Amino acid sequence: MKKIFPFLIALFAFMGCDDYNNVNIETLFFKVESHEWYLSGNPGEIGSYYYYEVPVRALDSYIYEKGIVTGNIFTNELIGNFNTEVQKPMPYTVYEAQNEVNSTFFWSEKYTYDFRPGYITFMVWYNDFQTGIRPPSCEYKITLSWEK
Image (cartoon, rainbow, N blue to C red; front, side, top):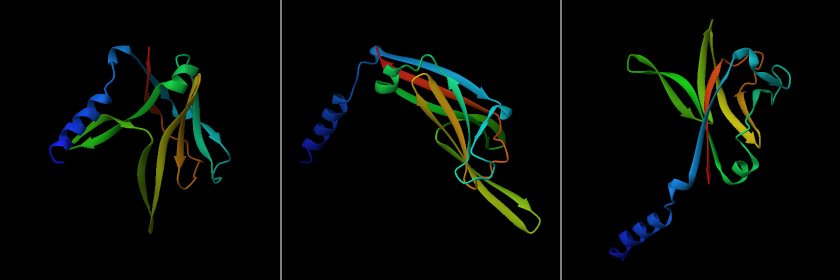
């Protein structure tokens, strides 16, 4: 059995290989300014969140049904002593805390996206639903890939 196992792993690895010459990839970049976010629901209401919908002509029904759509958000991270821009795959959750007199408030912000033919919708969810505060400006990278 020990001699057959490496052979089986190699066999399954090669079965999953595709011809990448037949793959199209399109990368799109978006920036949503803080004042552009729309509130779904009422401020502070349970289930409320912010969203921004973008028309994307390249995202047709073929890509929607048979392609792959991935999204990243650009953030700044402190790496060592340097503030560096990095990309985080979505959904991406940020954990926050704010010190007040005699108490500390904790919450999280979840950045995600949905898509349908012709549109991508970016969303921001606050776990405490304090949606009276708009999300910051955000930059995104969306990658579409599909077979020719």
